[in-house]
Length: 496
Image 1: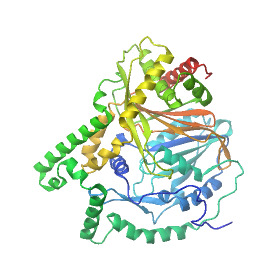
Image 2: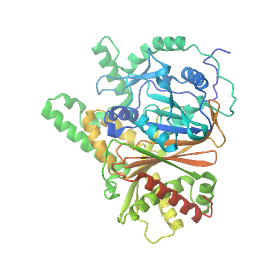
Image 3: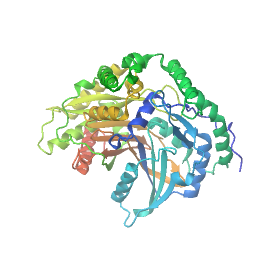
Image 4: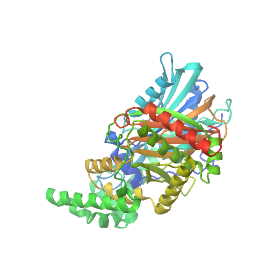
């Protein structure tokens, strides 16, 4: 087989920054609080177990093409600069790719419980931040692939583009070219040394040299914005009393920035049954016809994403109605991508708060249009800004415990986070097996639940990741959501 060459497969740009963005660094720092786990994941159901040897060959080739998957996090100098990425000189592919088998009978519930447990397991923060689990023993001879990666590696759009390395258009797709990973890794380690020092990563023999490079980098990158926002970062070194006052002022500044940028201060009332929070998770899945969603959304003068978010809100309200609990509003978020290129990896998104009032005596079509108009207004309010990036640089200067407590308080206002991804509109295969469904897992991160969907091959597959301390009956919520989407599709003249 042909040897890998850096000039091969230039059809898609492969762009990865040496240093984390402020937004990525915030997710990396805050992950130390297990309640705020920012990891994304995907459960792909296959018509048969994946060929592990074929999958491994695909991943070896991918590691040669996608540097981020072979890189670990290298801390910056204290809080002065974001962490950097560097090739892991002790990378072990067998650690990251594992083969599991369900015990009998291999039900879907067993599979969901297994992947929830795998999702909750913390990363080894000294290694690259991703894991693959090829799972067999599923009823009817099926298989599954569960993939999780830290959000600092990529957002949902970036993760889908990176998935091209192991996704095929036919079950008998040829194996990729052989690669000499040892040579590639060794060359990368040598080449990265100078880049890491220039970025200010904490790898220098001289603390003075590292500090100097870090400060120069920050001045060039931020132009003093953080110092003005915090009210003078130098004051952090003025003793405990002075530092305490600086932290309080910085937190107040962050809160004001968030409120001004996102309108989060309006999210006071929320789902009355969903107020508790924990680190535990529970996974439910559901699917909706993509053709039906398109037909219904168009008939009601909206988009598929409008229908997706409206159905999520309608299901949440129905959950409360079934328990005779009045609801003034459901506090939600939806994602606006701020990505301006087609590069793989990285993060470029903004969560947008959305407060949806109780339904009242409206038809399903009127309800849909109300939610649609709310989303348009909130999207226009955010515009091209990324509020998360605007505050992350300041938040990263604070102690992690302070940032985590503040993030928990903000997230506790949100009842349901939503995200909508667009996958392949045709049949795909992984390691010789046909993809029959793909359920994304978006981070709950202190909210009551996350509902994420991916549209692919005629289906909207949804992963409902729930905090069971907040939502006592996740299966009932899943049924409420199924009924809500059925009602909206019917209102738009489409079959479910």
